[in-house]
Length: 295
Image: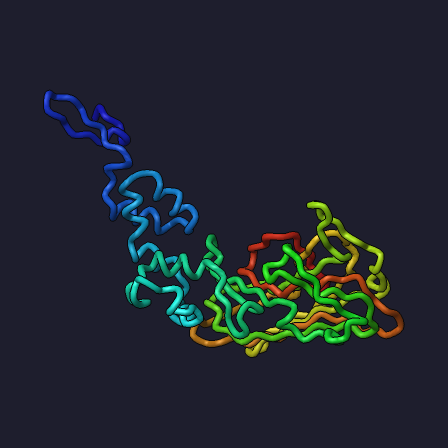
């Protein structure tokens, strides 16, 4: 037929062949392409040409990327501050809604707990600070010290100096979008700090974690359970210790989680551990080093 598929061409005045490019692609066709991409790729293609830029603003493209219960999730957003000049939530486009939910949204205690959309997978991420957890002896400065840091999204962590009975317990009741999720404790063995612009780790107070393993537990309101254990033996870096996975089968029904981290053998003391937070990610999303405990 002469011209190849990439030459889909018409005739210009004077008999010259005008080759069509991606810029001539109808917006609806471009939008159909974007439906198969994740949010970061959509934003990159939007910079390519006018067709993709227009398609990237289409509500039906972003509606497919939002969780089913995004309306419920938006209730946690302070409309007076976030909607602002746009007037009301109903006037926000789906792209605007996705962008807002992709930023941290505090809930149930302000800065101590927050969730956000993971841009690639579209599932919910969540973080609960050490202050949102029940920690044995946390109010006694002989055992625990709250330390400021730039290495935590909550700007501080709980540092264990020494204790006999170590236990950290937490729970959350939340309407997770239907997905499979992984729950982790974010821990650091050794006191992390910054001196003269350099990160240093003090290991002087690390002791007791090589004698007995710590035990992780996770349970859900619909009967899911996970139990595992491991030794804490890697100092000097923040690590996500995998507690277990759970399935949120319905976006309309809240899932109540209970989880714990314990080493309650009172034959010896333990210390030198930083407890930053508990984090929940869509299964397979691991932004930091992960250690999987043995079941």
